[in-house]
Image (cartoon, rainbow, N blue to C red):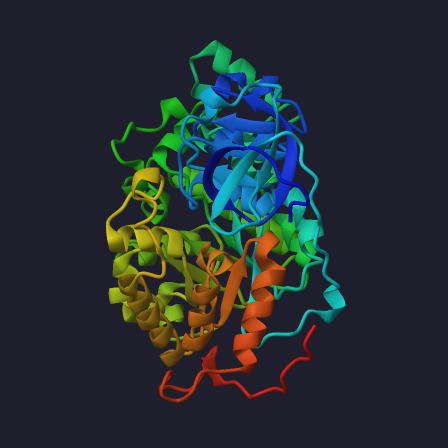
Length: 481
């Protein structure tokens, strides 16, 4: 908390709960990111995966646009960097070189003060953090942060996004690597050659870098499960990668366009998906990190799920769809989950769960699609709340369906990290796991532990709590800290 008062300059939506201070650096566009120096406060309009490299070294982040589920918010949470989004006219009011303090410790409203103010850091003794019946997992996609995050109390990684590894460590569109010999633009080929020195086969560069990144995360959390989500870039984000403009269409609404499962079986993108599968195989088979599980994002229909699973089997990963329907285990016990982030995933849950090992709820996308909003728009950010009755009803339905079928059900969206009452709601419904942003693990664990051991009355929750299809035994309440 702040130890001294300061002059308030601007306000926006707080991301995380930390405080920091430093000098402002205004970066108007991605073409200027080389001007950014480690330890500065990044101020810009909006970020996307192209910005990840400088976000990792920023002391704090301020964006004029976006909501708490935009790119800047998601990345800053995982990195543990204080961030305020939706700060109108930040680039006009703040000046490069100006000393400011970012305060995200006061709830949902983030504040920017003049000067570098003094603040106090709250510390926890991890040995005194209580155990929970509900599994607490971590969202971590940055290999460099995995080792330090692994020391937090956790049951593994509930979401590791491939996109962050691709954007920050690979940087090149996978199809530009696959079709490298056919590229006609000399400047593009030269740029790719510079980044891929030592790799005669450019496809190997992608597979090697992706497998190294995933392997680093899996090794840090070994032997706990690490759920790796296959790439979920939108077309505009793929276009931003080196060579991306040659292989990506321009869509009016990329959020609802060619993304997730629909890309993998498309003939144009199939070679790129094969490289992703090869990277997973290398991590599990060559590195021996069998704690890696995989997850399919944005799968609109069960038929799409079948196509992706068949393709994975063809590429040497997992078992056939028929074996899945007959509930036969994979020889190497590879679990394949699917994101629950589209209303059809809830409505047709019985069909999806016939072929997948369970659901991980992506509450960010599910909320925007249930309520019909653009999650990146600050104008409707207040409407996009996971605590809305319609969203909660969807969650109740899918949790019940998974429990009935003894399938895994977790959540990897930001809601339980942000709203205490939402985390309590999930415990009441009997969700198996919550995957949280690293900076909220301790706070949310304490909330979950309290609810775990102080369940609501029978009148509040009519059904028994079941985890993973097995009834949980009541444990003694933990000692109070």
